[in-house]
Image (cartoon, rainbow, N blue to C red):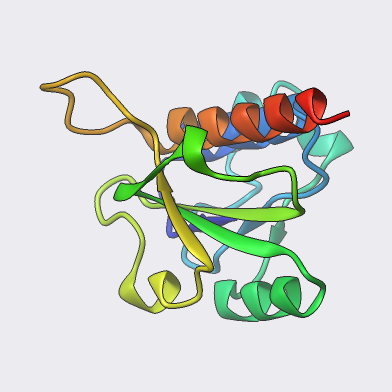
Length: 146
């Protein structure tokens, strides 16, 4: 799920990654970019039609996920390194906006906070890259546990 992502290229690329790495849906918060923005559609490379994104409240989504036994994980700079996390369980990832990151109200919903370790001097990754790395790590862990 996205928390306020505004860049249509980032959001569309993230949807493409969700589809490529075995995710079953993508949600956009109501204040994220429109899922019918032309650049969003182009960035999905056709995956929009296979896995159309849904716009929904992050608070509602996280509550529903938790009731179904899905862990809610947010990506943030000061989180636990992804290789120390267990993503073999059903997981809902929330990625924050490019400028603001994760809102405090969203942070409170998380079961855990993870981060993508980076080399010294690198401040951050863009939202689609960070989200793709999380999805890849989840797919890798699930494949290894079979």
